[in-house]
Amino acid sequence: SRHAMELPSVAAFALSRMPSASASPTTLRRTVGTPNALGPRGLRGLALGCAFGAARSRLRRGTFRHGRGDRCHARSTSTRATDVEFEYKIDLEGLVSLCKRRGFVFPSGEIYGGYNGFFDYGPLGAELKNNLKRMWWRRMVHMKDDVIGLDSSIVTTPSVHQASGHVDNFSDPMVDCTESKKRFRADQLLWAKVEQEDGTVLGYVSMVEDGDVEKAMAKAAKKLAKEKGATGSLKEIHIKDMTEATEDEVPFIPSPATGSPGLTGARAFNLMFETYVGPYADGASKSYLRPETAQGIFVNFKQVAYVMRQKIPFGIAQIGKAFRNEITPRQFLFRSREFEQMEIEYFIDPEADFKAIQEDWIMEMWNFLKAVGVNESLLDRQVHEGDKLAHYARACTDIVFRYPFGTQELLGVAARGEYDLQQHAKASGESLEYQVPGQKRKFVPHVIEPSLGIDRLFLALLCSAYDEDEIDGDKRSVLRFHPCVAPITCAIFPLLKNKPPLVNKAKGLASMLRTRGFNVLYDEAGTIGKRYRRMDEVGTPFCCTIDFDTLEDDTVTVRKRDDPMTVERMRRDEIGDFLEKECRLPMSC
Image (cartoon, rainbow, N blue to C red):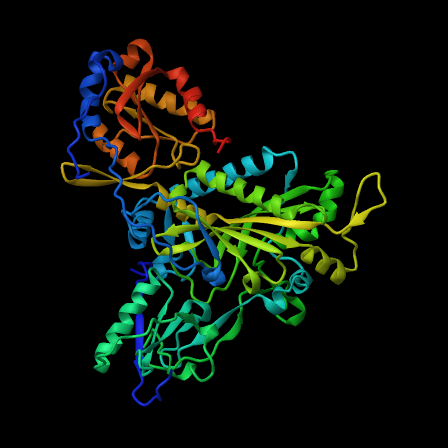
């Protein structure tokens, strides 16, 4: 599979002439409630459905291990969020397969073999993604008095990117394999010297960062020692990336692609996509696809503050596409070349306590993740310190998530200071100072930036929601999405498809719910049990079945995905209010 999980590939190079250096599963019985709850004629048809419905799964426990962080985050200070242990029931390859099979995500241009680093969101993926954006916007913009929205253009004058420093400095370190012609991000290509306790250097091992790096490198070091016939004990290996390799070390580090030396030294690779505006493809018409949404907010700061009569502190929020020509896009949606961001630039007084405001935004973003259904036991913090901070940042804290391939950045909350506004003021000649109302005081605001990638959140939510039911040894997948973000809110089933009165009632309920803004699915194919299972696999939280009792008292059976052994009857005209209550985004988290 083109998008199968990338397993650690470890290369080793031996040096022969180097000088010495100093609850077991149970079968669950099914109950469908009392005959009074279902009605005598509805019971018969629904019993079969509940017999095949999803059971509450037994969560398998495992060891919570932290992998390396994204980019330079690996050496940042980390604080455990919780001691709850968790073990995945699916790996990245399984998630990729599930997404394609159930219509969440497809490889872009798959009929032509796909296009590395680009993905298309399928029908259910588009619904889930849009629900996440809508919930974020509701919580971060509509529910706050001091945050307003903006939608800036993807392509703008290149002067914006020149002033922000992206043209000259927005790059990743890259190394080439001269034999295989493959390219690697230098800060993700890891290596270590293998050395005996007596100082004898046996060689070097290397791998592309993935999964449990320490374990994989230690195993490779032992294998190298065995191949060399070394009998003494080995020194503890110290893992570095290629940006830390000296000119003398580079020639001896093996390429993960070939297992032999042949890597170049690290060099800068600019990540921005170039484009041309107008009929001529020359230097005068060159521009860029934006690598982040933030700059569109900064250049519009003064206009927005004026027309919306905003007073410091206030924020400008934006959801939009960004593009980065990643050297090695990998790990499915986690690192792609086209992605979408949800960002806020929150402008504050330079004399304000920026650390306290930053902490407030960290907690607000953490609580949002919990509210939409991200598993809190998989969340953690990583604080950037010293030379690990970006050149513009006064402070930065990432909220990281333990994906199946390791712990990586999910979102960041940075204190950007006044750097961006000062750069644009200097380059444009326009003052971006804020005039304090009723005072003579002016200042260039400082900025707190909460930035979240929708695609990474999408992947984290899939990881959190995936579960398995086991009934009589038969494992079945279920996605436990929160109702506020589930792609399909409710499925409507007529008990029998060959009974027009049942079909008409079911279609009428579906139409009524759609007019109230719910995404519902009408399904009459297969047994009730099979229909339930199909909905469980795509995360539908509620199913309503129209049976013969509906024709008498206008009540329907409501089955909840996460409590399938209990069903209840509800009047048809009450279903809309019930779903509206269940689908509210929790604001207290």
